[in-house]
Structures are given as C-alpha cells and as structure tokens.
Length: 120
Length: 378
Image (cartoon, rainbow over the protein chains, first blue to last red):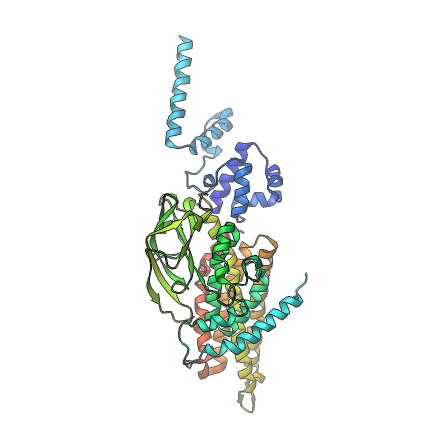
C-alpha cells in the first residue's frame, strides 16, 4: 500500500460520499490543492489527517490502508450510457468481504427471479 | 524571512557547546574510551538534555525541532556517537508525542528526563531488511487485554541499554501495513532478549544490537492507538519524516567539526614558507567545505521549521538528510586530505569523523530510499 494507493482510496471514498474536493478540503481545513495532492499521493497523509478524513467520509481507518484490488477505471467498462453507474457499483463491490459479496449475489438472483415471475 | 535565532536559543547553544566541549569531546578519541559509557550521558542528563523534546509537563524541556537541531549539531560536533544515542531516543519518543495516550506519556516519557534519565530505542529493521515493510516478520496476536509479540529486530541503536523500546510489528501477515502497530516494550519484559551486540566501523560509542521477542505479552495500554487498526503505518512514516531532519543536524555537526579541525591545521601547518591555508588549492577546498556545511545547515533548519509550523515537511526532511549525509562524507574526506597522514592515523579526530560520517547515508532510510520519497512528491 503506497501513498498513491491511499490517495486513490481517498478519492473513491470522497466520490462515494458525493463531496467535491473543495467541500472535503474545507471540512478537513486544508486547501483544495493540498487535498488534490493527497489524492494523487504527492503529499504525505499523516495519522491526524486520515483520522479526520475517516470521520468525515464514514470509513474506518483500515479502509484506506488495506491492500485491496486496484479500483476499476471507467475506460475498462463497456457500459455505454450506464458506465458511471457500473463503475460506482463495481468499486463498491470491490470493497466488500466475500460474505457480503455472496449476499449481494443472492439478492441479485432474487431480483432476477422476481422479474421472471412477474413476467410469467 | 528571518534567519536569526532568539535569545533563548542562543543561550542554550552556548551552554551546550561549552558543556560538550569540556565534558564529552575529550572522550571521542581518547584511547581509554571505547564503547558505551553512561558517564557521558550523565553529563547531558544533569542539564535535562537526554530527551529535551519531551514536554515540560512530563519532565522535559519541551524544545521545538529547530532548537533541538541546534543542540544536536553541537553534540554531534563534539561526539557523533553520543549524538546517535540521543537521536535514537528522540526517535523512539516521537510516536508517543504524536499519538500516545496520556497514560503512555505519563508512563514512558518521564523516564527519559532529569538527572537520572534513561534511554529509549526504536526497532524497525529486521535481518531481511528495513525499508521493505512487506517482508517484515515481527507479528503480534491479540489475546485478552493485550498482544503476544514474536519476531526479531536488528541493528537497533540503544537496544542493549534502553529502558524501553518502540517496536514495529503487524497483527496480520496478509495486511501488514494496514495492521501495523507501535508496541512499547519494557526492557525487563518476559520473553525479550538481546541476541548480540553489533560492532560497527563508526559510531563505536553507540550500542547497536539484535533483539528477539518470544511470546512477549504487551498490554493494550502499551500499544499506541491499540484499538485502532491502520494507524501504525502512518505513524511510522511520520516518525521517519521527522527523524530525518535530525540526521541532517548530526551531519552538520560532524561536517563542522571536520571543517574546524582542517582550518586550524591549515592555519598552523607551514609548507614552502607559508601556512598551507595560503595555498590556493587548500583555501578553495576549505571554502567549498564551509559552503557545503552552510547548505546542509540551512536545509536542516528549513525541515525543522516546517515540522514546528505543522507544514508539509516530508520532502524537506528527506532532502536535508540526503544533502547533510553526503556533505558530511565529502567534508570529512576533504579534511582528511588537508591533514595528510595525520588524518589517516588511527585515533585521530578526522579518522574517527570519516568513519562516523559513513553511516549517515544508511541510517533512517538509505539515501536511495530518500530519493524515492522525494521523487514521489514531485
């Protein structure tokens, strides 16, 4: 886990929360350019910063530190107009545990089953 | 921009310079002095100078980084080995100052203050390496109200004599960085042992050792942010970013001592009817040495100033360490050239300083690691 990866996760968490860089920077008490450098991994994030960020973004500290698979980029998707939605969904799923992924899959199976039943 | 020091800083520097020159420097190359001796630490302890960054409420002097760097230059100019022992203690204290609980501060900090001050150590490097944390083996397993620590650390300055050691370990071998913690281990802990004391070519005064932990139980109260997984790695990087500026200060001290020695020798040494300082080759060499010492000093001051201001000091600190350590090596070697055979003689001050300066590009993260840190921020 490098500071670049921590920064990428910070960006994902911010986007998930629906905050702009400017809004998060204001909440953190730093400039927007400093936050941008945190997200690019060009500026060191220290414990006190990340503790505050984890509070603002409702993520545990480990979320930023765990070495998960790299996030999917938009250009990897073939979702047409829905690629933004797909990207958001996939990146949320990436952060889930195996158990949670099984639950999500069974819920998808349930939705498909319901649709099929309604169509009959 | 104001480069002047305040009255308190000037008085402290003067007091420490006088103290170390009379009580500590004579032992640097004394034939009777070899290896660690508490007596030199006691000289500093009398003036509460073993760990002066400890806040006043815990018995210390509460010095900021810049003032500490000024004092570190003086100590290193007199005795680099003593400076290394003090720097290792400052390093161990850093995680507690940054994120320790009040209980941890009350328990561990006062031990390093006052006339009976002890020393502390910081243990990260293992036999397999120090910079690549992914191959770190020291692990801890949570059980009950604490953790069982297993593993070993090597090349730990102060390890054989420290009252306590800040040990870096992980609680998950799969997610090492995410599970890293700082464990505060007391010297008398059951299962802790000193495997061997390392002999090094420089800094002979500093006791450097390999240590091991076999099911050492560490109460949660002695683990920094024990409840909070994910905090250790950030704490570690911040500790190093601050510690590197102090290596810059040690480098300045060693380089200055070499420059002063070379200058004095050049003024008194007569060749071809005049002092060798009047020969342009020697004069230019001295000029380059003085310029380099000033460059290293200013970069160290800037890094320390940024730390004190709560600024972004990571890059400045790494730069101060790279520049300082390389300048210390260049200046000590240039001084040895001016002193000729006398600079090569075992037991001479310059010969000692050349050996002491050599390690500066290795400790606190090698200079190549510093360059990687700097490059990542460009």
